[in-house]
Amino acid sequence: MPEATQSALPTERRGVPRPVMGLAAVACIAVQFPGSLWLSGLALALWLALLLVGDRPALARLWLPRFWLLTLAFALGSGLLLGPRVGHDLFGVMSREGLRAGLLMVVRGAFIFALASWASRTLTQEELQRSFRRVGLARLGSALGVALRLLPELQVRLRGPAAGGAERGLRRLREKLVGLVTESARLAETLATTAPRRSPMSRRVAAVTGAPRTGKTTMVGAIVEKLATRGLEAAGVVQLAQLDGGRTVGYELRAVPGGEKHALARRRAGVAPSGLGFDFDDEGWRWARHRIGEARRSRPLVVVDELGKLEAAGQGHLPALEDEIVGEPPGVFLVAVRAECAEAIGERLGGFALVLPTGSDDEAIEAFAADVQALAHSRRAQEAQG
Amino acid sequence: MPAASPADRLWSQAAAFGALWGSLEITLGSFLHSLRLPFAGVLLASTGTLLLVAARQILPRRGSTLAVGAVAALCKSISPGGVILGPMIGIASEALLVELVLMPAPRARASAAIAGALAALWAASQKLVTQVIFFGGGVLSLYLALLRRARDWLGLPAEAGWWALTALLTVIVLVGAAGGLLGRSVGHEADRRLASARQAPPVLEAPRA
Image (tube, rainbow over all chains, first blue to last red; front, side, top):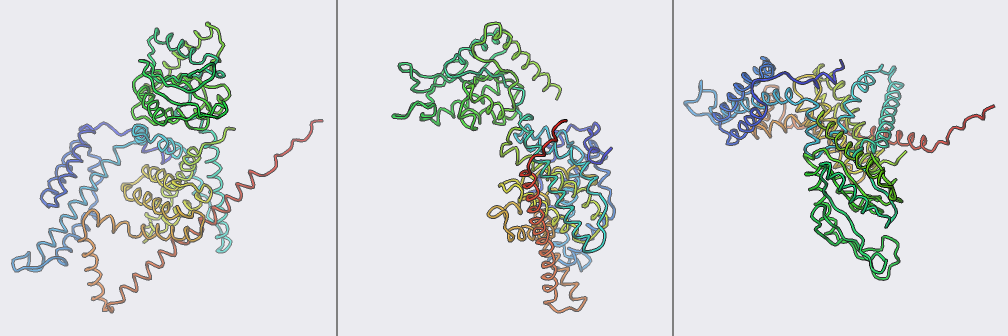
């Protein structure tokens, strides 16, 4: 087995639960803040006792006689070289104050060493990656996962044959470095261009696509109703056009469920109806983002209507969909997408799992709703499997 | 093939170069430490800076160096052997220093040299800085007292110690700067090769008979 994967194996069962050990570690660190030798000694003794009960292999790793002899010599040396000497000091040559400072160093050093010995055994690689996802650093976790998979191969390549004579060797070394860096950059490019398919949103989005005013919102509403009867409750926002004599004069957001309203955009005076001639209200986007975030935390189905030119450029509702949410339960998205922007938005979201064009008949809508339900089930099953 | 977003490019580069640096730390680092070579950390820091500066020539984007450092430090966490916290802190600190220095002018020679020099100086002094943080300023007094004793025993003049220290720091700075400059040169060459590969005309297939 390659070295890189050995420590990824789960560690054996231990006597003291990990949260208890973690809390004890924090308490032991806190106790040492005043800088008292006795308190630091107490913290070290407590931690060693916990290791004795909870993680004996970590304790065994502290058996380094040469290291401890050296640190003890360090403490004695500080007693000899540092601090004021008074008549009643030890052996007449050693400063009590200097010795105390040296012993404090040794005790604190031993504690930190013992703490690191436990921590390095306790956190496995899979747990680290999962932890990154939990604290919203999913991208770092993914990058780490990719890097760890590359490690064994890179280690083999780095152990390649050494170069020959002096000058030629230096040139060959530079050439080898250029080759390594070029290959790494190529690898990075490949990883980057395939990344959208591995996006966190990938295989989570069902899209209803169509041109403006072809019934996307109506169709989304119908699907939401069908899914509600099957026990899949939805939440999110829909964006309704405000019409005046057949002309769109603004957009209004409406919360699902509840129907709470919020203004989003008004047409600019004197601007041709190009589709982007609107003044958007930042407060409206914030309101929608908050609603979408709440929906992602609480519901298995998140509705966002609609995604268009702004979202194709990475703006509008898109940041709300890309937000990394700590502890987000497995869910799926039902979005209404303008047909002309569907390809660009699909790329940004890692591809649509399901697509239903407007104008589809009832049978197709029914089948689409069933597919969305199946998608939600499979997401839950995948998450449960880890 | 879809165009990658800037964030995807940054994290993909972090994965590729972080793995490369992590591998170097695990293989070369373990080797140098097992030889108990003095200033092995300086050599490793110089090599790390070489990679960081080279990567920054290819993707001169803010934060990319820090991301590479974060991945490499975490890769080091799986290194076999007892003490990993120190090297992990070292890698992360070196990446932070290089990121800060390269921020204003990522492709300048001076930036590369300064970044390398600072990373090497940090590697040389990390142990001392960590001891001061953990144990307080008393450690410095202890070391200075030991050096004074040694100087007295050897019968050296008072200023000899400062000359020795200056010479040592100069060597460390030169080793680090050389790593940074080599990294810049390697990165430029790699970038040139990548650009020419992108611009190369497509190979035409021979017509079928």
